[in-house]
Amino acid sequence: MRNTLQSSFILAYLLTTCSVLSAQDLNFTGNDFVSWSYPRGLVNVGQEGIAVKRFEKSFNAVANANEFSSSTIGDYGQRFARSPSNAATAALVGDQDMATWWQPNEEDPVEKWWIEIDLGRAVVAEKMRVIFPDNEEGRPFSFFSVYVSPGIPVFGGTAKRIVYSRLGRPINNNTSSVVEFDLNTTGLLPATGEYLSDSEEVNFDIVRFIRFEAAGKTPSAALAEIEVDGVGFNLSTRVQTEVRVEDNLPHWGGRTWTSKDRDCNGCGKGSGAESLIDQDVGYRGWNIEASDKGNWRDSGVWSVIDFGNVFRVDRIVWMPIVSGQGPFLYGFQRDKQGTWGSFELLSSDGTSSNSSDPVVEGPYLYDLLSAVDNSKRRYLFDFQFDPLPLLIATFA
Image (cartoon, rainbow, N blue to C red; front, side):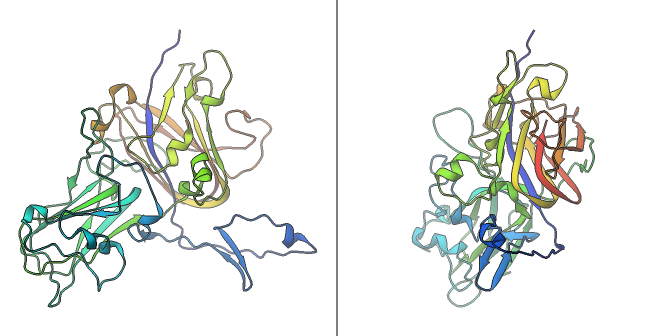
Protein backbone atom coordinates (compact mmCIF):
# COMPACT_ATOMS: atom_id res chain seq x y z
CA MET A 1 0.00 0.00 0.00
CA ARG A 2 1.33 3.39 -0.94
CA ASN A 3 0.91 6.45 1.27
CA THR A 4 1.31 9.71 -0.63
CA LEU A 5 2.25 13.07 0.84
CA GLN A 6 3.37 16.35 -0.59
CA SER A 7 5.53 19.00 0.95
CA SER A 8 7.69 21.89 -0.16
CA PHE A 9 11.08 23.17 0.81
CA ILE A 10 11.15 26.82 -0.06
CA LEU A 11 14.58 27.91 1.09
CA ALA A 12 17.94 26.23 1.57
CA TYR A 13 20.80 28.46 2.59
CA LEU A 14 24.29 27.19 2.97
CA LEU A 15 26.39 29.97 4.38
CA THR A 16 30.11 30.37 4.71
CA THR A 17 31.01 32.78 7.49
CA CYS A 18 34.59 31.83 8.24
CA SER A 19 36.69 34.88 9.00
CA VAL A 20 40.01 33.02 9.17
CA LEU A 21 41.14 30.97 6.18
CA SER A 22 44.19 28.77 5.89
CA ALA A 23 46.46 29.07 2.85
CA GLN A 24 48.20 26.55 0.67
CA ASP A 25 50.93 26.85 -1.96
CA LEU A 26 50.10 25.93 -5.54
CA ASN A 27 53.07 24.58 -7.49
CA PHE A 28 52.93 24.05 -11.25
CA THR A 29 55.43 22.20 -13.39
CA GLY A 30 55.68 21.95 -17.15
CA ASN A 31 52.35 22.67 -18.85
CA ASP A 32 50.26 22.05 -15.71
CA PHE A 33 49.27 25.70 -15.40
CA VAL A 34 48.00 25.90 -18.99
CA SER A 35 45.74 22.89 -18.48
CA TRP A 36 44.57 23.90 -14.98
CA SER A 37 40.77 24.01 -14.87
CA TYR A 38 39.70 26.44 -12.19
CA PRO A 39 36.30 27.86 -11.20
CA ARG A 40 36.06 31.37 -12.64
CA GLY A 41 34.68 33.78 -10.09
CA LEU A 42 36.13 31.76 -7.24
CA VAL A 43 39.66 31.89 -8.62
CA ASN A 44 40.80 34.65 -10.97
CA VAL A 45 44.12 34.42 -12.77
CA GLY A 46 45.72 37.66 -13.95
CA GLN A 47 49.10 39.08 -14.83
CA GLU A 48 49.73 39.90 -11.17
CA GLY A 49 49.01 36.38 -9.99
CA ILE A 50 46.13 34.32 -8.62
CA ALA A 51 43.34 35.96 -6.61
CA VAL A 52 40.90 33.88 -4.56
CA LYS A 53 37.43 35.19 -3.71
CA ARG A 54 37.05 36.43 -0.16
CA PHE A 55 33.88 35.67 1.80
CA GLU A 56 32.70 38.15 4.41
CA LYS A 57 30.65 37.42 7.52
CA SER A 58 28.16 40.15 6.60
CA PHE A 59 27.21 42.12 3.49
CA ASN A 60 24.79 44.83 2.39
CA ALA A 61 22.11 43.00 0.38
CA VAL A 62 20.87 46.29 -1.13
CA ALA A 63 24.21 47.11 -2.76
CA ASN A 64 23.98 44.31 -5.35
CA ALA A 65 20.20 43.90 -5.54
CA ASN A 66 20.22 44.80 -9.23
CA GLU A 67 22.29 41.69 -9.96
CA PHE A 68 19.33 39.48 -9.05
CA SER A 69 15.93 38.93 -10.59
CA SER A 70 13.19 36.82 -9.07
CA SER A 71 9.52 36.26 -9.83
CA THR A 72 7.15 39.22 -10.01
CA ILE A 73 4.04 39.26 -7.83
CA GLY A 74 1.57 41.66 -9.41
CA ASP A 75 3.12 45.12 -8.98
CA TYR A 76 5.83 43.73 -6.69
CA GLY A 77 9.23 42.88 -8.13
CA GLN A 78 8.91 44.75 -11.43
CA ARG A 79 11.67 47.19 -10.49
CA PHE A 80 14.20 47.74 -7.70
CA ALA A 81 12.37 50.68 -6.12
CA ARG A 82 8.92 52.19 -6.50
CA SER A 83 6.99 55.06 -4.94
CA PRO A 84 3.89 57.09 -5.87
CA SER A 85 5.69 60.30 -4.94
CA ASN A 86 8.78 61.51 -6.83
CA ALA A 87 9.20 58.04 -8.32
CA ALA A 88 12.10 59.15 -10.55
CA THR A 89 14.45 59.37 -7.56
CA ALA A 90 13.26 56.25 -5.69
CA ALA A 91 16.25 54.12 -6.75
CA LEU A 92 18.66 56.56 -5.06
CA VAL A 93 17.99 54.83 -1.72
CA GLY A 94 20.19 51.98 -2.98
CA ASP A 95 23.00 53.79 -4.80
CA GLN A 96 25.45 53.73 -1.85
CA ASP A 97 25.79 57.51 -2.04
CA MET A 98 24.81 59.47 1.07
CA ALA A 99 24.77 62.70 -0.93
CA THR A 100 21.77 61.60 -3.00
CA TRP A 101 18.29 60.74 -1.76
CA TRP A 102 14.62 60.12 -2.40
CA GLN A 103 12.49 63.03 -1.27
CA PRO A 104 8.68 62.85 -1.55
CA ASN A 105 6.82 65.76 -3.07
CA GLU A 106 5.61 67.95 -0.22
CA GLU A 107 2.42 68.69 -2.16
CA ASP A 108 1.48 65.01 -2.24
CA PRO A 109 -0.72 63.66 0.57
CA VAL A 110 1.11 61.73 3.27
CA GLU A 111 -0.61 58.54 2.04
CA LYS A 112 1.78 58.71 -0.93
CA TRP A 113 4.87 59.19 1.20
CA TRP A 114 6.06 55.61 0.96
CA ILE A 115 8.75 53.71 -0.91
CA GLU A 116 9.35 50.00 -1.51
CA ILE A 117 12.52 48.22 -2.59
CA ASP A 118 13.07 44.70 -3.89
CA LEU A 119 16.29 42.87 -3.00
CA GLY A 120 15.74 40.67 -6.05
CA ARG A 121 15.93 37.49 -3.96
CA ALA A 122 15.13 36.22 -0.47
CA VAL A 123 17.96 36.99 1.97
CA VAL A 124 18.80 35.71 5.44
CA ALA A 125 19.22 39.08 7.15
CA GLU A 126 19.99 40.15 10.71
CA LYS A 127 19.83 43.99 10.66
CA MET A 128 18.34 46.81 8.63
CA ARG A 129 19.06 50.55 8.62
CA VAL A 130 17.41 53.63 7.19
CA ILE A 131 19.78 56.57 6.70
CA PHE A 132 18.66 60.18 6.29
CA PRO A 133 20.47 63.33 5.20
CA ASP A 134 20.58 66.14 7.75
CA ASN A 135 21.19 69.46 6.06
CA GLU A 136 19.22 72.36 4.66
CA GLU A 137 18.09 70.38 1.62
CA GLY A 138 17.14 67.14 3.33
CA ARG A 139 16.09 66.20 6.87
CA PRO A 140 15.30 62.95 8.72
CA PHE A 141 11.71 61.77 8.69
CA SER A 142 10.12 62.38 12.09
CA PHE A 143 7.28 59.83 11.91
CA PHE A 144 7.54 56.55 10.05
CA SER A 145 7.37 52.75 10.11
CA VAL A 146 9.41 50.11 8.30
CA TYR A 147 7.98 46.81 7.05
CA VAL A 148 9.54 43.66 5.57
CA SER A 149 8.22 40.72 3.53
CA PRO A 150 9.78 37.44 2.37
CA GLY A 151 8.01 37.80 -0.97
CA ILE A 152 5.42 35.03 -0.70
CA PRO A 153 2.21 35.75 -2.64
CA VAL A 154 -1.09 35.22 -0.85
CA PHE A 155 -2.68 32.02 -2.16
CA GLY A 156 -6.07 32.33 -3.87
CA GLY A 157 -8.00 35.38 -4.99
CA THR A 158 -7.57 37.40 -8.15
CA ALA A 159 -5.27 40.15 -6.85
CA LYS A 160 -1.59 39.25 -6.49
CA ARG A 161 -0.37 40.62 -3.17
CA ILE A 162 2.16 39.98 -0.44
CA VAL A 163 2.09 40.35 3.34
CA TYR A 164 4.29 42.82 5.22
CA SER A 165 5.20 42.74 8.91
CA ARG A 166 6.30 45.87 10.76
CA LEU A 167 9.72 46.05 12.40
CA GLY A 168 9.25 47.09 16.02
CA ARG A 169 6.99 49.97 16.95
CA PRO A 170 6.22 53.08 14.86
CA ILE A 171 8.97 55.71 15.09
CA ASN A 172 7.82 59.06 16.49
CA ASN A 173 9.65 62.38 16.88
CA ASN A 174 12.80 61.03 15.25
CA THR A 175 15.80 63.35 14.87
CA SER A 176 18.50 60.72 14.17
CA SER A 177 20.21 60.37 10.82
CA VAL A 178 20.50 56.60 11.22
CA VAL A 179 17.79 54.32 12.62
CA GLU A 180 18.67 50.62 12.94
CA PHE A 181 16.35 47.64 13.35
CA ASP A 182 17.21 44.13 14.53
CA LEU A 183 15.66 41.35 12.47
CA ASN A 184 14.54 38.20 14.25
CA THR A 185 12.08 35.34 14.04
CA THR A 186 10.15 34.43 17.18
CA GLY A 187 7.67 31.80 18.33
CA LEU A 188 9.66 28.81 17.07
CA LEU A 189 8.80 25.46 18.61
CA PRO A 190 11.56 23.20 19.97
CA ALA A 191 13.35 20.55 17.92
CA THR A 192 16.42 18.46 18.70
CA GLY A 193 19.43 17.65 16.54
CA GLU A 194 23.20 18.02 16.44
CA TYR A 195 24.34 21.63 15.98
CA LEU A 196 20.73 22.83 15.89
CA SER A 197 19.63 25.89 17.86
CA ASP A 198 16.42 24.98 19.68
CA SER A 199 15.71 28.52 20.88
CA GLU A 200 12.23 29.90 20.28
CA GLU A 201 13.90 32.94 18.68
CA VAL A 202 16.65 33.29 16.06
CA ASN A 203 18.42 36.56 15.29
CA PHE A 204 17.54 36.75 11.59
CA ASP A 205 14.57 36.90 9.27
CA ILE A 206 13.90 36.03 5.62
CA VAL A 207 13.57 39.28 3.66
CA ARG A 208 13.00 40.21 0.02
CA PHE A 209 10.83 43.38 0.06
CA ILE A 210 11.19 46.43 2.34
CA ARG A 211 8.60 49.19 2.68
CA PHE A 212 9.30 52.57 4.30
CA GLU A 213 6.12 54.48 5.13
CA ALA A 214 5.78 57.99 6.59
CA ALA A 215 3.12 58.47 9.28
CA GLY A 216 3.25 62.25 9.15
CA LYS A 217 4.81 65.01 7.10
CA THR A 218 8.22 66.43 7.97
CA PRO A 219 9.48 69.54 6.12
CA SER A 220 12.26 68.63 3.64
CA ALA A 221 12.08 64.96 4.72
CA ALA A 222 14.37 62.71 2.66
CA LEU A 223 15.70 59.14 2.70
CA ALA A 224 19.29 58.65 1.51
CA GLU A 225 19.90 54.91 1.92
CA ILE A 226 18.35 51.64 3.01
CA GLU A 227 20.85 48.98 4.11
CA VAL A 228 20.20 45.31 4.88
CA ASP A 229 22.87 43.21 6.62
CA GLY A 230 22.80 39.73 5.09
CA VAL A 231 24.38 36.78 6.93
CA GLY A 232 27.45 35.19 5.37
CA PHE A 233 27.61 34.23 1.71
CA ASN A 234 24.92 31.96 0.31
CA LEU A 235 26.95 29.32 -1.54
CA SER A 236 23.81 27.80 -3.02
CA THR A 237 23.45 30.88 -5.27
CA ARG A 238 26.47 29.71 -7.28
CA VAL A 239 25.49 26.08 -7.87
CA GLN A 240 25.04 25.35 -11.56
CA THR A 241 21.40 24.90 -12.62
CA GLU A 242 19.69 24.88 -16.01
CA VAL A 243 18.21 28.32 -15.39
CA ARG A 244 21.56 29.86 -14.44
CA VAL A 245 23.21 28.40 -17.54
CA GLU A 246 20.39 29.51 -19.86
CA ASP A 247 20.29 33.03 -18.38
CA ASN A 248 24.10 33.29 -18.33
CA LEU A 249 24.10 33.84 -14.56
CA PRO A 250 27.30 33.30 -12.55
CA HIS A 251 27.90 29.80 -11.22
CA TRP A 252 30.83 27.74 -9.98
CA GLY A 253 29.76 24.32 -11.23
CA GLY A 254 28.09 21.58 -9.26
CA ARG A 255 24.55 20.26 -9.68
CA THR A 256 21.49 19.05 -7.83
CA TRP A 257 19.59 15.78 -7.99
CA THR A 258 16.66 14.20 -6.23
CA SER A 259 14.40 11.16 -6.26
CA LYS A 260 12.51 12.22 -9.39
CA ASP A 261 15.29 10.61 -11.45
CA ARG A 262 14.77 7.09 -10.12
CA ASP A 263 13.32 4.49 -12.46
CA CYS A 264 11.47 1.99 -10.28
CA ASN A 265 7.91 0.91 -9.60
CA GLY A 266 6.24 2.51 -6.59
CA CYS A 267 9.18 4.80 -5.87
CA GLY A 268 8.71 8.10 -4.11
CA LYS A 269 9.40 11.03 -6.41
CA GLY A 270 10.64 14.55 -5.66
CA SER A 271 10.57 17.51 -8.00
CA GLY A 272 13.72 19.32 -9.03
CA ALA A 273 16.09 20.06 -6.17
CA GLU A 274 17.14 23.30 -7.90
CA SER A 275 14.05 24.85 -6.28
CA LEU A 276 15.89 24.57 -2.97
CA ILE A 277 18.57 27.02 -4.08
CA ASP A 278 16.83 29.54 -6.36
CA GLN A 279 16.34 32.16 -3.59
CA ASP A 280 12.64 32.37 -4.44
CA VAL A 281 10.39 31.58 -1.49
CA GLY A 282 7.20 32.56 -3.27
CA TYR A 283 6.46 30.25 -6.16
CA ARG A 284 8.96 27.44 -6.49
CA GLY A 285 9.51 24.67 -3.98
CA TRP A 286 10.75 21.09 -3.78
CA ASN A 287 7.58 18.97 -3.87
CA ILE A 288 7.76 15.38 -2.72
CA GLU A 289 5.44 12.49 -3.47
CA ALA A 290 6.75 9.85 -1.12
CA SER A 291 6.19 6.16 -0.46
CA ASP A 292 6.57 5.05 3.15
CA LYS A 293 9.07 2.22 2.84
CA GLY A 294 10.73 2.58 6.20
CA ASN A 295 13.78 4.65 5.25
CA TRP A 296 14.45 7.83 3.29
CA ARG A 297 16.45 6.18 0.50
CA ASP A 298 13.68 3.75 -0.50
CA SER A 299 10.88 6.20 0.29
CA GLY A 300 12.26 8.85 -2.04
CA VAL A 301 12.40 11.66 0.49
CA TRP A 302 15.83 13.06 -0.35
CA SER A 303 17.59 15.78 -2.26
CA VAL A 304 21.28 16.38 -2.94
CA ILE A 305 23.21 19.60 -3.60
CA ASP A 306 26.69 19.37 -5.10
CA PHE A 307 28.44 22.74 -4.68
CA GLY A 308 31.01 22.02 -7.37
CA ASN A 309 33.98 22.83 -5.11
CA VAL A 310 35.02 22.09 -1.55
CA PHE A 311 34.23 24.99 0.81
CA ARG A 312 34.78 25.43 4.52
CA VAL A 313 31.29 25.97 5.88
CA ASP A 314 30.06 26.68 9.40
CA ARG A 315 26.33 27.33 9.03
CA ILE A 316 23.25 26.00 7.27
CA VAL A 317 19.85 27.69 7.38
CA TRP A 318 16.89 25.68 6.13
CA MET A 319 13.16 26.34 5.97
CA PRO A 320 10.57 23.71 5.01
CA ILE A 321 6.83 24.30 4.81
CA VAL A 322 5.48 22.65 7.96
CA SER A 323 1.78 21.98 8.26
CA GLY A 324 0.03 24.36 10.64
CA GLN A 325 3.19 26.24 11.63
CA GLY A 326 4.89 29.48 10.65
CA PRO A 327 3.74 32.89 9.47
CA PHE A 328 3.84 32.00 5.75
CA LEU A 329 1.00 29.47 5.43
CA TYR A 330 -1.15 32.09 3.69
CA GLY A 331 0.92 31.37 0.58
CA PHE A 332 0.51 27.60 0.28
CA GLN A 333 -2.23 25.04 -0.26
CA ARG A 334 -2.81 22.56 2.54
CA ASP A 335 -1.60 19.67 0.39
CA LYS A 336 1.74 21.48 0.00
CA GLN A 337 2.31 21.37 3.76
CA GLY A 338 4.03 18.35 5.33
CA THR A 339 4.75 17.42 8.94
CA TRP A 340 8.53 16.86 8.65
CA GLY A 341 8.54 15.04 11.96
CA SER A 342 12.13 13.89 11.46
CA PHE A 343 14.89 14.30 8.89
CA GLU A 344 18.65 13.97 8.45
CA LEU A 345 21.30 16.28 7.10
CA LEU A 346 24.37 14.57 5.66
CA SER A 347 27.59 16.05 4.33
CA SER A 348 30.52 14.94 2.21
CA ASP A 349 33.89 16.47 1.41
CA GLY A 350 34.00 14.52 -1.85
CA THR A 351 35.84 11.46 -0.56
CA SER A 352 34.94 8.52 -2.81
CA SER A 353 33.05 5.47 -1.57
CA ASN A 354 32.37 2.03 -3.03
CA SER A 355 29.40 1.38 -0.75
CA SER A 356 27.21 4.44 -1.35
CA ASP A 357 24.15 4.17 -3.58
CA PRO A 358 25.29 5.82 -6.86
CA VAL A 359 21.73 6.91 -7.72
CA VAL A 360 20.92 8.42 -4.34
CA GLU A 361 24.22 9.60 -2.90
CA GLY A 362 26.57 9.45 -5.84
CA PRO A 363 29.96 7.75 -5.37
CA TYR A 364 30.77 9.67 -2.19
CA LEU A 365 31.35 8.95 1.47
CA TYR A 366 28.94 10.83 3.73
CA ASP A 367 28.93 11.81 7.38
CA LEU A 368 25.75 12.37 9.35
CA LEU A 369 25.83 16.05 10.26
CA SER A 370 22.52 16.15 12.14
CA ALA A 371 19.55 13.85 12.80
CA VAL A 372 16.59 16.04 13.71
CA ASP A 373 13.53 15.14 15.77
CA ASN A 374 10.88 17.68 14.78
CA SER A 375 7.82 16.17 16.40
CA LYS A 376 6.79 19.62 17.67
CA ARG A 377 6.81 20.97 14.07
CA ARG A 378 9.45 23.69 14.01
CA TYR A 379 9.58 25.49 10.64
CA LEU A 380 12.96 27.28 10.64
CA PHE A 381 16.29 25.58 11.33
CA ASP A 382 19.69 27.11 12.06
CA PHE A 383 22.64 24.70 12.20
CA GLN A 384 25.97 26.17 13.39
CA PHE A 385 29.18 24.18 13.77
CA ASP A 386 32.95 24.44 13.56
CA PRO A 387 34.08 25.01 9.96
CA LEU A 388 34.12 21.78 7.96
CA PRO A 389 35.08 21.01 4.35
CA LEU A 390 31.91 20.53 2.33
CA LEU A 391 31.33 19.55 -1.28
CA ILE A 392 27.89 17.92 -1.07
CA ALA A 393 24.91 18.27 1.28
CA THR A 394 21.98 15.84 1.39
CA PHE A 395 18.57 16.55 2.95
CA ALA A 396 16.62 13.40 3.76
